[in-house]
Image (cartoon, rainbow, N blue to C red; front, side, top):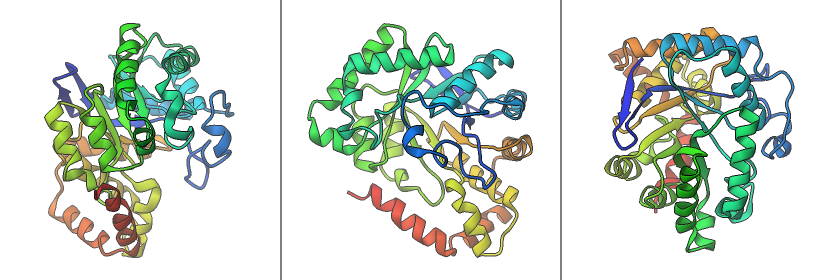
Length: 317
Protein backbone atom coordinates (compact mmCIF):
# COMPACT_ATOMS: atom_id res chain seq x y z
CA UNK A 1 0.00 0.00 0.00
CA UNK A 2 0.97 3.60 -0.55
CA UNK A 3 0.46 5.76 2.54
CA UNK A 4 0.15 9.52 2.59
CA UNK A 5 1.06 11.35 5.77
CA UNK A 6 -1.13 14.18 7.00
CA UNK A 7 1.33 16.18 9.09
CA UNK A 8 -1.35 18.32 10.73
CA UNK A 9 -3.04 15.18 12.08
CA UNK A 10 0.14 13.14 12.62
CA UNK A 11 -1.38 10.13 10.85
CA UNK A 12 -0.85 8.20 7.62
CA UNK A 13 -3.80 7.22 5.45
CA UNK A 14 -3.80 4.57 2.75
CA UNK A 15 -3.92 6.09 -0.73
CA UNK A 16 -6.93 3.88 -1.46
CA UNK A 17 -9.83 3.61 0.94
CA UNK A 18 -12.83 1.27 0.86
CA UNK A 19 -16.37 2.62 0.73
CA UNK A 20 -19.21 0.86 2.47
CA UNK A 21 -21.74 0.65 -0.35
CA UNK A 22 -23.26 -2.71 -1.13
CA UNK A 23 -24.74 -3.28 -4.55
CA UNK A 24 -27.85 -4.48 -6.36
CA UNK A 25 -27.61 -6.93 -9.30
CA UNK A 26 -27.69 -4.03 -11.79
CA UNK A 27 -24.61 -2.49 -10.15
CA UNK A 28 -26.41 0.39 -8.41
CA UNK A 29 -25.87 0.94 -4.70
CA UNK A 30 -28.26 -0.49 -2.16
CA UNK A 31 -30.38 1.72 0.05
CA UNK A 32 -30.28 4.82 -2.13
CA UNK A 33 -31.73 2.89 -5.07
CA UNK A 34 -34.16 0.82 -3.03
CA UNK A 35 -35.91 3.44 -0.88
CA UNK A 36 -34.03 6.73 -1.12
CA UNK A 37 -36.26 8.81 1.17
CA UNK A 38 -36.01 6.27 3.97
CA UNK A 39 -32.35 5.41 3.39
CA UNK A 40 -31.12 8.90 4.24
CA UNK A 41 -33.00 9.06 7.54
CA UNK A 42 -31.75 7.89 10.94
CA UNK A 43 -32.98 4.42 11.85
CA UNK A 44 -33.25 3.04 8.32
CA UNK A 45 -32.78 -0.73 8.35
CA UNK A 46 -31.71 -2.83 5.41
CA UNK A 47 -31.65 -6.59 5.09
CA UNK A 48 -28.55 -8.67 4.49
CA UNK A 49 -25.84 -6.05 4.93
CA UNK A 50 -22.44 -7.18 6.19
CA UNK A 51 -22.65 -10.77 4.93
CA UNK A 52 -19.72 -13.10 4.22
CA UNK A 53 -19.28 -11.33 0.88
CA UNK A 54 -18.57 -8.10 2.72
CA UNK A 55 -16.35 -9.78 5.28
CA UNK A 56 -14.28 -11.20 2.41
CA UNK A 57 -13.82 -7.66 1.10
CA UNK A 58 -12.58 -6.54 4.51
CA UNK A 59 -10.08 -9.39 4.69
CA UNK A 60 -8.77 -8.50 1.24
CA UNK A 61 -8.52 -4.82 2.18
CA UNK A 62 -6.44 -5.77 5.22
CA UNK A 63 -4.14 -7.92 3.08
CA UNK A 64 -3.40 -4.89 0.93
CA UNK A 65 -3.00 -2.50 3.87
CA UNK A 66 -6.14 -0.38 3.44
CA UNK A 67 -6.63 1.63 6.63
CA UNK A 68 -9.39 4.07 5.66
CA UNK A 69 -13.04 3.05 5.49
CA UNK A 70 -16.14 5.13 4.74
CA UNK A 71 -19.79 4.35 5.46
CA UNK A 72 -22.86 6.47 4.81
CA UNK A 73 -26.35 5.13 5.52
CA UNK A 74 -27.27 3.35 8.75
CA UNK A 75 -27.20 -0.26 7.43
CA UNK A 76 -23.61 0.32 6.25
CA UNK A 77 -22.66 1.79 9.61
CA UNK A 78 -24.15 -1.10 11.56
CA UNK A 79 -22.65 -3.70 9.21
CA UNK A 80 -19.14 -2.25 9.42
CA UNK A 81 -19.26 -2.07 13.21
CA UNK A 82 -20.40 -5.70 13.36
CA UNK A 83 -17.94 -6.90 10.71
CA UNK A 84 -15.00 -5.26 12.48
CA UNK A 85 -15.75 -7.42 15.50
CA UNK A 86 -16.12 -10.53 13.34
CA UNK A 87 -13.03 -9.76 11.23
CA UNK A 88 -10.82 -7.52 13.40
CA UNK A 89 -8.27 -5.39 11.54
CA UNK A 90 -4.63 -6.31 12.23
CA UNK A 91 -3.62 -2.66 12.49
CA UNK A 92 -5.13 0.74 13.29
CA UNK A 93 -7.85 1.88 10.92
CA UNK A 94 -9.79 5.12 10.41
CA UNK A 95 -13.51 5.32 9.74
CA UNK A 96 -15.35 8.23 8.19
CA UNK A 97 -19.10 8.61 8.45
CA UNK A 98 -21.73 11.34 8.52
CA UNK A 99 -24.76 12.38 10.58
CA UNK A 100 -27.99 11.17 9.00
CA UNK A 101 -30.73 13.57 7.96
CA UNK A 102 -28.58 16.65 8.55
CA UNK A 103 -26.39 16.98 5.48
CA UNK A 104 -26.70 17.97 1.83
CA UNK A 105 -30.32 18.76 0.96
CA UNK A 106 -31.85 16.44 3.55
CA UNK A 107 -32.37 19.29 6.03
CA UNK A 108 -33.20 22.88 4.94
CA UNK A 109 -30.09 25.05 5.30
CA UNK A 110 -28.51 22.25 7.34
CA UNK A 111 -29.89 23.80 10.51
CA UNK A 112 -29.75 20.57 12.53
CA UNK A 113 -26.02 20.25 11.97
CA UNK A 114 -25.57 23.72 13.44
CA UNK A 115 -27.40 22.77 16.64
CA UNK A 116 -24.82 21.21 18.94
CA UNK A 117 -27.30 19.30 21.08
CA UNK A 118 -28.88 17.66 18.02
CA UNK A 119 -25.52 16.92 16.45
CA UNK A 120 -24.09 15.43 19.64
CA UNK A 121 -27.15 13.21 20.04
CA UNK A 122 -26.74 12.00 16.45
CA UNK A 123 -23.05 11.24 16.96
CA UNK A 124 -23.88 9.27 20.11
CA UNK A 125 -26.57 7.37 18.17
CA UNK A 126 -24.03 6.48 15.47
CA UNK A 127 -21.48 5.30 18.01
CA UNK A 128 -24.06 3.03 19.65
CA UNK A 129 -25.10 1.70 16.23
CA UNK A 130 -21.50 0.92 15.26
CA UNK A 131 -20.30 -0.15 18.69
CA UNK A 132 -17.45 2.37 18.62
CA UNK A 133 -16.03 4.71 21.25
CA UNK A 134 -15.42 7.56 18.84
CA UNK A 135 -15.76 8.51 15.17
CA UNK A 136 -12.37 8.97 13.50
CA UNK A 137 -13.59 11.36 10.81
CA UNK A 138 -17.04 12.90 11.16
CA UNK A 139 -18.14 14.25 7.81
CA UNK A 140 -19.93 17.63 7.81
CA UNK A 141 -21.76 17.81 4.44
CA UNK A 142 -23.41 21.25 4.40
CA UNK A 143 -24.36 23.30 1.36
CA UNK A 144 -23.81 26.91 0.36
CA UNK A 145 -27.42 27.60 1.32
CA UNK A 146 -26.45 27.04 4.99
CA UNK A 147 -23.76 29.73 4.73
CA UNK A 148 -26.08 32.12 2.90
CA UNK A 149 -28.91 31.69 5.41
CA UNK A 150 -26.72 32.01 8.51
CA UNK A 151 -23.66 34.25 8.47
CA UNK A 152 -22.51 32.63 11.71
CA UNK A 153 -22.71 29.08 10.34
CA UNK A 154 -18.95 28.52 10.09
CA UNK A 155 -18.60 29.78 13.67
CA UNK A 156 -21.21 27.22 14.72
CA UNK A 157 -19.24 24.51 12.91
CA UNK A 158 -16.08 25.62 14.68
CA UNK A 159 -17.79 25.36 18.06
CA UNK A 160 -19.44 22.01 17.26
CA UNK A 161 -16.23 20.42 16.02
CA UNK A 162 -14.26 21.66 19.03
CA UNK A 163 -16.87 20.40 21.49
CA UNK A 164 -17.19 16.97 19.86
CA UNK A 165 -13.41 16.63 20.03
CA UNK A 166 -13.29 17.89 23.61
CA UNK A 167 -15.87 15.31 24.66
CA UNK A 168 -13.92 12.56 22.90
CA UNK A 169 -16.73 11.75 20.49
CA UNK A 170 -14.73 12.42 17.32
CA UNK A 171 -11.04 12.60 16.45
CA UNK A 172 -11.18 14.61 13.23
CA UNK A 173 -13.71 16.52 11.13
CA UNK A 174 -14.04 16.48 7.35
CA UNK A 175 -16.06 18.99 5.36
CA UNK A 176 -18.12 18.07 2.33
CA UNK A 177 -20.66 19.61 -0.03
CA UNK A 178 -22.34 19.36 -3.41
CA UNK A 179 -22.42 23.14 -3.93
CA UNK A 180 -18.95 23.41 -5.42
CA UNK A 181 -15.78 25.47 -5.23
CA UNK A 182 -17.05 28.50 -3.35
CA UNK A 183 -18.33 26.37 -0.48
CA UNK A 184 -15.20 24.21 -0.36
CA UNK A 185 -13.03 27.32 -0.07
CA UNK A 186 -15.18 28.58 2.82
CA UNK A 187 -14.86 25.20 4.50
CA UNK A 188 -11.09 25.00 3.92
CA UNK A 189 -10.55 28.50 5.25
CA UNK A 190 -12.92 28.08 8.19
CA UNK A 191 -10.18 26.86 10.51
CA UNK A 192 -12.22 24.02 11.98
CA UNK A 193 -11.86 21.12 9.56
CA UNK A 194 -9.09 18.56 9.21
CA UNK A 195 -10.04 17.26 5.77
CA UNK A 196 -12.12 17.93 2.68
CA UNK A 197 -14.21 15.12 1.18
CA UNK A 198 -15.31 15.51 -2.43
CA UNK A 199 -16.29 14.03 -5.76
CA UNK A 200 -13.11 14.05 -7.83
CA UNK A 201 -12.02 12.24 -10.97
CA UNK A 202 -10.57 12.98 -14.41
CA UNK A 203 -13.98 14.21 -15.60
CA UNK A 204 -14.76 16.12 -12.40
CA UNK A 205 -11.52 17.99 -11.79
CA UNK A 206 -12.68 21.54 -11.02
CA UNK A 207 -11.07 21.36 -7.58
CA UNK A 208 -7.60 21.38 -9.18
CA UNK A 209 -7.55 25.13 -9.76
CA UNK A 210 -8.25 26.63 -6.33
CA UNK A 211 -9.68 24.13 -3.85
CA UNK A 212 -6.89 21.56 -3.75
CA UNK A 213 -4.08 24.16 -3.53
CA UNK A 214 -5.94 25.82 -0.65
CA UNK A 215 -6.38 22.46 1.10
CA UNK A 216 -2.66 21.79 0.76
CA UNK A 217 -1.82 25.24 2.07
CA UNK A 218 -4.03 24.62 5.09
CA UNK A 219 -2.55 21.18 5.70
CA UNK A 220 -5.88 19.42 5.14
CA UNK A 221 -6.29 15.83 4.07
CA UNK A 222 -8.24 15.39 0.82
CA UNK A 223 -10.56 12.39 0.58
CA UNK A 224 -11.98 11.76 -2.89
CA UNK A 225 -14.89 9.63 -4.06
CA UNK A 226 -16.78 8.80 -7.28
CA UNK A 227 -13.54 7.77 -8.96
CA UNK A 228 -15.68 5.70 -11.34
CA UNK A 229 -18.35 8.43 -11.63
CA UNK A 230 -21.18 6.17 -10.42
CA UNK A 231 -20.69 3.94 -13.46
CA UNK A 232 -20.53 6.68 -16.08
CA UNK A 233 -16.89 5.73 -16.62
CA UNK A 234 -17.99 2.45 -18.15
CA UNK A 235 -20.59 4.17 -20.33
CA UNK A 236 -17.80 6.38 -21.65
CA UNK A 237 -15.76 3.30 -22.40
CA UNK A 238 -18.59 1.68 -24.34
CA UNK A 239 -19.07 4.84 -26.39
CA UNK A 240 -15.44 4.79 -27.57
CA UNK A 241 -15.09 1.02 -27.91
CA UNK A 242 -13.25 0.22 -24.66
CA UNK A 243 -15.12 -2.58 -22.94
CA UNK A 244 -12.44 -3.72 -20.49
CA UNK A 245 -13.90 -2.49 -17.21
CA UNK A 246 -10.93 -3.63 -15.16
CA UNK A 247 -8.63 -1.51 -17.35
CA UNK A 248 -10.96 1.49 -17.13
CA UNK A 249 -11.11 1.20 -13.34
CA UNK A 250 -7.33 1.05 -13.01
CA UNK A 251 -6.81 4.02 -15.33
CA UNK A 252 -9.36 6.17 -13.49
CA UNK A 253 -7.89 5.28 -10.10
CA UNK A 254 -4.33 5.91 -11.23
CA UNK A 255 -5.37 9.37 -12.41
CA UNK A 256 -6.59 10.17 -8.89
CA UNK A 257 -3.41 8.80 -7.34
CA UNK A 258 -1.35 11.04 -9.64
CA UNK A 259 -2.76 14.21 -8.04
CA UNK A 260 -0.35 15.18 -5.27
CA UNK A 261 -2.95 16.86 -3.05
CA UNK A 262 -5.17 13.76 -2.87
CA UNK A 263 -4.65 11.83 0.37
CA UNK A 264 -7.12 8.96 -0.04
CA UNK A 265 -9.32 7.88 -2.95
CA UNK A 266 -12.40 5.92 -1.91
CA UNK A 267 -13.50 3.06 -4.12
CA UNK A 268 -16.48 0.76 -4.08
CA UNK A 269 -16.31 -2.95 -4.85
CA UNK A 270 -18.98 -5.60 -5.19
CA UNK A 271 -16.66 -8.57 -4.85
CA UNK A 272 -13.08 -9.55 -4.09
CA UNK A 273 -12.08 -9.75 -7.76
CA UNK A 274 -13.09 -6.11 -8.33
CA UNK A 275 -11.30 -4.99 -5.19
CA UNK A 276 -8.09 -6.84 -6.04
CA UNK A 277 -8.09 -5.33 -9.54
CA UNK A 278 -8.35 -1.83 -8.10
CA UNK A 279 -5.81 -2.39 -5.34
CA UNK A 280 -3.32 -3.82 -7.85
CA UNK A 281 -2.52 -0.27 -8.99
CA UNK A 282 -0.42 0.35 -5.88
CA UNK A 283 2.34 -1.85 -7.33
CA UNK A 284 2.61 0.43 -10.40
CA UNK A 285 0.68 3.66 -9.74
CA UNK A 286 2.05 5.66 -12.65
CA UNK A 287 0.00 5.99 -15.83
CA UNK A 288 1.69 4.18 -18.71
CA UNK A 289 1.68 5.58 -22.24
CA UNK A 290 -1.08 3.11 -23.12
CA UNK A 291 -3.16 4.23 -20.13
CA UNK A 292 -2.62 7.89 -21.01
CA UNK A 293 -3.97 7.05 -24.46
CA UNK A 294 -7.04 5.44 -22.90
CA UNK A 295 -7.74 8.69 -21.03
CA UNK A 296 -7.40 10.71 -24.22
CA UNK A 297 -9.83 8.42 -26.05
CA UNK A 298 -12.34 8.60 -23.19
CA UNK A 299 -12.35 12.39 -23.44
CA UNK A 300 -13.99 12.07 -26.86
CA UNK A 301 -16.98 10.18 -25.44
CA UNK A 302 -20.30 12.09 -25.50
CA UNK A 303 -20.92 11.11 -21.86
CA UNK A 304 -17.55 12.60 -20.87
CA UNK A 305 -18.23 15.88 -22.67
CA UNK A 306 -21.62 16.24 -20.99
CA UNK A 307 -20.35 15.18 -17.57
CA UNK A 308 -17.24 17.36 -17.50
CA UNK A 309 -19.16 20.48 -18.51
CA UNK A 310 -21.74 19.97 -15.80
CA UNK A 311 -19.20 19.23 -13.07
CA UNK A 312 -16.68 21.97 -13.81
CA UNK A 313 -19.45 24.55 -13.74
CA UNK A 314 -19.69 24.03 -9.97
CA UNK A 315 -16.18 25.37 -9.53
CA UNK A 316 -16.65 28.56 -11.56
CA UNK A 317 -17.41 31.63 -9.43
